[in-house]
Image 1 (cartoon, one colour):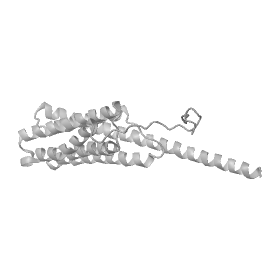
Image 2 (cartoon, helix red, strand yellow; image 1 turned 120 degrees about the vertical axis):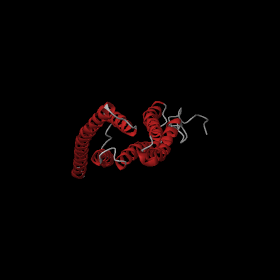
Image 3 (cartoon, rainbow, N blue to C red; image 1 turned 45 degrees about the horizontal axis):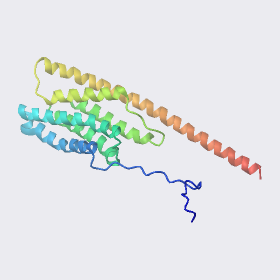
Image 4 (tube, helix red, strand yellow; image 1 turned 180 degrees about the vertical axis):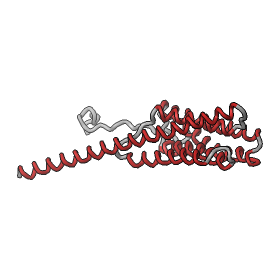
Length: 223
């Protein structure tokens, strides 16, 4: 032994270990809270077949808290490096669960047409599956249109959870119409991005294979 550190002697350096965020951080706790709120929201909304205005107001409060935590948990995770494998899986599940539960319950109660619920759920599930389809070629980032769509959906569904009459009932119909239009439009845009991303990925793979084949041919010719 020379007593000289490996780094000073030109030896290999060990990269400093990156501290991983623990499971019990504020971002994950908010995600867990949103998951817990899903069954609580369903019970509140469906109480007495959805005819009790007070219970529906409580259901709206639960839905509002879920939507707010959806905004903050992702922001906190990215800002303070609290991203975990649990959060990557649980966060989108919680998002889809609360929105899906609200749409299905409202349709069961007869407050919202089933075709609206079908369009939104088909879009959300389809885009999620499509992201996995192209994930080896790259990640489709959330667009500004997608964020506006989420805001419109949350606002519209929240208004349907409340018992509204008169002009407000008419207004919420238009808000939901805007949400449906944005849902379809952003869904089609994500499909376009996925197709472009996959084509680029396949073209890159073909170019790499061609380059490898050319290098192999040159090595064989030089023997």
